[in-house]
Amino acid sequence: MSPRLLTHTAITAACRARPITAQVTSLAARLASLSTQNQSRTISILANLTPNKGAVKERKRIGRGPSSGHGKTSGRGHKGQGQHGHVRPWFQGGQTPLIVKHGRKGFTNWESKANDEDHDRRAPQLSQVNLDQIQSWIDQGRLDATRQITPKELIESGLLGSVKDGVKILARGAECLKQPIDVMVSRVSASAITGIEAVGGKVVTRYYTKLAIRRLLTGESINTATPLPVGKEHVESVLDMAKGFRYRLPDPTSREDMEYYRDPAHRGYLSHQLKPGESPSLYFKVPGKEKIKSTKQKKVVQETMW
Image (cartoon, rainbow, N blue to C red; front, side, top):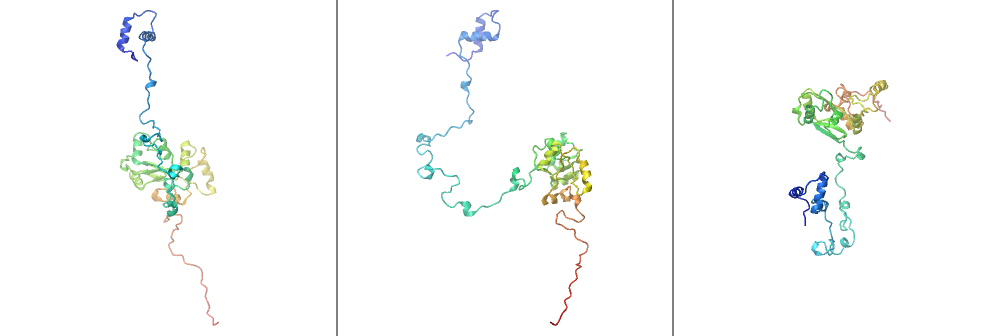
């Protein structure tokens, strides 16, 4: 059988044996003449193609004799419901199901839920970023330490890849901070607050939602640490501030969120609403200096003989 490919020596010998005429000038014409002269076979690559090892799983052939291990009963065993019919995966052989006998135990951890359908019932999913990552981005010039660092800057710089319900700063690498920074995010750990303020930085925590962060990225709202004031006299000032933007950042409505951002220990943006001696709790009353005495007069009961 002639070889599939012509070797270099064979091509050289054929070129020397046959004189080159003026009519055959192209290399393709020379190779065509050589192939017809030696009558070599064409190269077949498709016949040698095979899938990668493990890419194709062989089909399980049952009922083809005992040598395969799946013959005779075809892996179903002898008699009974397993061989003759279909058994549901949760069938327990006819006994009282364990879920009926013992009931449901445990609880549903809503902190692990990440579906938007259960948004009202689950804990917020926060993106986490550490102080050493922020310092690394500043050293690379991807974050400006002279400007306030908000979720918008963290996402646009590529430090955070996805938009979640908010951003939380953690304290890993607090000793790596070289300059003061001004941050305003959803949550900041106590150790991170200490590390940022130790170098002269500023921390403000503000209420964000996933939709609010998306609107910040698209430029439909402005980032501000001022809550919406209450009263007719503030309407004009709020409208002037919102010119050029379709939306404003929302304020917390649940008791848990309101108490968090009212706490000065969390550096919340609502902490200025607290009165002296008042607790962040919404149900806390400032104690008075003196005990308030009742002004009601007791009725005098006259004793009679009858």
